[in-house]
Image 1 (spheres, rainbow, N blue to C red):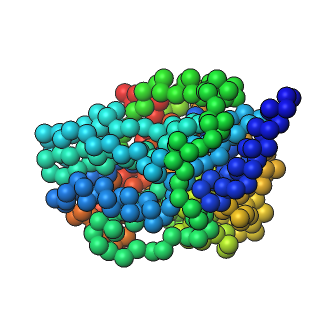
Image 2 (cartoon, rainbow, N blue to C red):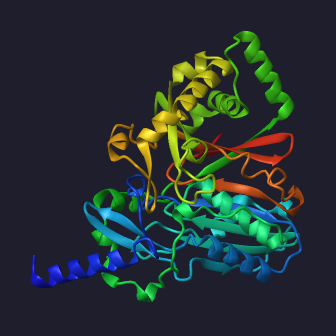
Length: 415
């Protein structure tokens, strides 16, 4: 190593020591595999006749209040790090109006128009794309998973809605807020923004293969009456079959779609993110960051074909219950000075993600139900949610009281 290299490394270390926790966040072990992954994305429809400028200003107020968008230190190879940046926290884009009502737009076309962020050195962390339509405005949000999980994003969007409507909102958690302002790109030491050629092989391949396959989506609707009927039938079959709406819906979707969405495997793993904010006593309910861990339930396709809806749902319930054990969670997660972190040894023993055999199933019914959150369904709705990492998944959303819908995502067409 040359003398100049030693000087450069010493300057880097000093730079990080001065800024960590103020405007740079080192990612926990759980997040070191983020570079090159897909972002979390949400497409919102806002019905109210509100000036675009007010919507934009409210979004920036929410961002400033929560101070989410400081730069992130990311691992790009073994013992090699780089920075993601945010100029002023957000990349904002307003597209020309579309001469159509919400009921007549194609969601897939809108997704192609929005700006998508990348979790790569020198890239911004979040992009907002505004698209006026005849009866409102569409807001498409693309957010690096380095900022937080889907729950953190939904909490942030809820605050945005409260600011627009002039409503009060809960204070953000102090467990992962920064003392300083985000670093502007032109002020970041350029040695922290290496060329893409310096990325590790795994990340290089991830970036190379990103977007090569079209993603297909479908919807299934589940009225409360239907779900209650299934619950009563399950309990009649076996008293221990006390199952939830979410477990029932996953079981039905597995029965109907497993051959089409995962045609090349005989063994399927369902990953259900468990919100650690509800389980770990030291984690704030309004923690902003990544605060989830997956419960894993494994099925063969033969299992799915032979088992009843009630049996599949109960197996899912047992896996989720085991993951929600407070003692177990406290063994794998701890609170550091920069937020929560995961013990590396635990992660090493977990089954690695497998795009050919894993289904990510996320229950967001409580977080996107605008009525239960006090905003009212008359102000807007959530049209689409795309979660990072997995391209095959089930996302449970609540369109209105009395009806849940599931968004099914697949790398293969449904017909």
